[in-house]
Image (tube, rainbow, N blue to C red):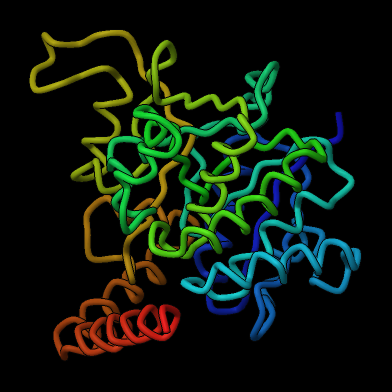
Length: 314
């Protein structure tokens, strides 16, 4: 089986991408890494470019480009660059891991491929606990159409292991048609489309955060700080006497945040930085908060998202 890791990045996300690759290699993972250009200014980090095979959309087939353009007709809530992750389905790899840049590897990802037997997609997240509110404007309609347990198969698209087959492409194209037929139900982003494709195509999914594996949550927001994460990995709850078996976790995902560095758990995403550089980054982040720059940026983004959704419904 030919396999590897696929990333999508540009100069804007380079800081996090460097740390992601650093954490992958520090975890003893030797899988090849392909980085697809997100758009805008390209990464220029020597560390990144020495570790990856750099690709752009132009390196893929016309069929792949047409597929992404078809997805774009309905996935209007996310920039085009986010859709380039779907180009990985047209690579020469049989299996691949896709990862967002705001992720830290906490184990050797080569071991995740041990779980692919009998499954189309392997992931480790607790998206299913959100009851579809981040994927659907009307999540109850999804259960009406696909069954009462359909929201329990939700996938966080920021980290997933895919075992490719041609049917997955046709299922995602069918999901595009479903979006067009039910525009009032889904939020128009890639994560929702993957979930709908899995429901339409009957994909065999394995979520390692569910029984019988019960791996720890991979969302950074579930941990107060690094100590909380370490104690969770060792099976501790409130008291040492409550120690159980060791837990497992594949990665930590810093999703749902406009910027990082203000929470104690955020230190892991700066693991590759020198002490001086890390402190300078924290200083800049705190200054943008102090002078309300962060607040103004957040408000502008919210207005843009609101207007885009309004325009999309016209």
